[in-house]
Length: 444
Length: 182
Picture 1: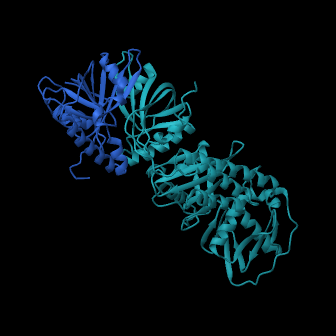
Picture 2: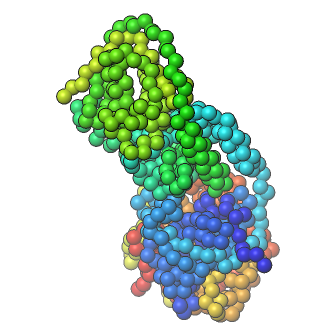
């Protein structure tokens, strides 16, 4: 006999219809209550949300047995499951993914502040019984996610540089999964922070927008190295508030804003964030959102996790080949029209063009270094390699995200449509394209 | 939401319990709980086997007799093990949960009796199911989903009868699960 498997029951474990849990005390006196979450863990285990220390909790600790009824919302088929309690987790990836899901459910039920996850109770499934009763015909066509995933991975394989690859990642989410709003954020070397490098479906690209670890579904996915998904709108995982605070803090230096607004939807109801990992290391986060509720189910999470995993592998492969460097080619000299004042603030490595904020951090320091050399020598052609070893840039020892930084810098300049651009100039090379006179200032 | 809306909290349940007398002399439930139980709420049940394994079940409605006896109506086929346990004299727990305010209470008794449905049970189940379906639509269910959730087979109904011996507030929040005592 094979062990009972929960795999086919996952639609019933999304929390669409509340589940019911029965327990009993040592004397066999039963207790029955609703339970917010029965979370799929693997084919033989679930985690239940522990929110209050109540009779259910006391009974579980005393007798370890639970009988739970769940409902598949697509067919109304019901299942009765017998569980054996194993342990309670109060932190870590599983806890955080349940906490995020619960925040969405709480807000949906007007229970924000009441539903709070105290722990994730792990159970082993002893038996699964289909409960006899009326069901409804399931008419919705299942999305062929496996085929979509394969096509998405194929499309990523065709990319030959990082910039193309990151853009393609958001394109395939739309083309293969119908996800219209998405972005790729990369982790900052040595910092608990991510920044957006590619996005799709937003009024402003938001390239350069920062998310701290732990902030929203993106920041939690990054910190915990686990997919995080929410099916209802919730304030707790919004970026708006946190980003405003980040912006405020960042802007304190001289009052000018030094942050790029997060480009996300104003009223997202579904969000999913998948860590992009390579050998257990966080490279970034793939993020998608939608205005509909419950847009991303377990199967979508699996599919997108595969895409994010493939993306991580492709990034690693492209980076491994990064040492290839083309010979420099002379760029064409542009006629210079007008004057732009470039200001650099060493404190946060921020760069302003005239009075408008452009970028800060490593990308700001890179731009400043390039412009100073251009000013001194007229040089416009550079190799990534020389930036990597430049002590003045204060790069971490293994600054693997330098390529992503350059994409960010190039895009920010493009979006500003200023007379100052950075162009690719072959493998491992890039070129300053300057069409105005520059005045460089470094206020004390 | 109307201006007279009182949010359901365990503390409000305790206050309402203290402010009322039992609906029937010799019985336990207050008039508001008697009303809530019959107002189209979700009805969930539990018993246990003699080996101490809990058994969960779902009801389709509830009626309260003039003497305070609860008659919980449920599908036989779906609750075969639960009914067998009750027939063996095992204890019962029933929780009533309202939508959309989540106001809930639980009753328990040492034993329950299994009875046939009465001629007027089905129209009352239909009424309660219709109200519950509306409540589910109000909290975001599609109409199809809500109707599907409350569908039952009229030929497959049993009644479980018992007098509540203990009552607990089951509304979510601080104090949830507290026993309501005299």
